[in-house]
Image 1 (cartoon, rainbow, N blue to C red):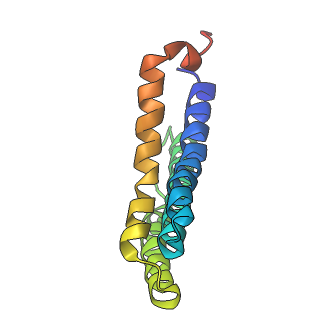
Image 2 (cartoon, helix red, strand yellow; image 1 turned 30 degrees about the vertical axis):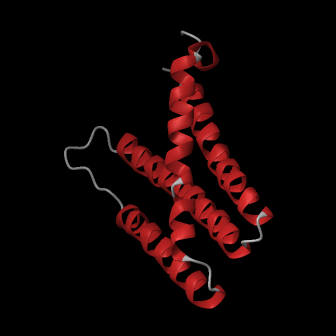
Image 3 (cartoon, rainbow, N blue to C red; image 1 turned 180 degrees about the vertical axis):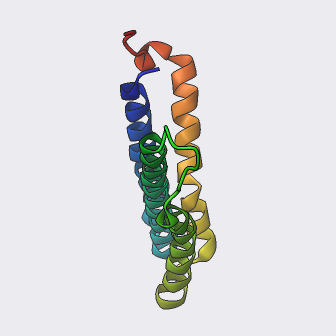
Amino acid sequence: MGDDFYRRTESRISSLTLVLGAAAALPVACRGNWRWAAGLCTGSFLAWCNFRWLKQGAQALTEAAKGQAQQKKVHIPLAAYFTAAFRYGLIALAVYVIFKCLNVPVLSMVVGLCALGAATLVVSVHSILRPSDYEWKKR
């Protein structure tokens, strides 16, 4: 499969994460529950950030591996490990601060974090049902 195929799929998942978060928050906000709507938006935004950071970390590891392909002992930068652990800590800290300072329900943020999984599921099912939208050019 071509790199373009993966980039488009990642882009669809990334965009759909934010769209699903906003789509879930809209009816909740219309019913007057602003804190829950803010939690859903916040959670989906944090899920989007997590996805972006995961992608950047994977790219860094891939580049490090490519650069050291001929070496017997591969050196993975310490920053790659730190970034992988740090993103979860940062998300947890953001959820805690928003909960404590803004009184946004934690459960609403957790549900918002599920937007990434929902987006991935939607893109996966769509690629199965409409494979022509996901075809790549053979080289």
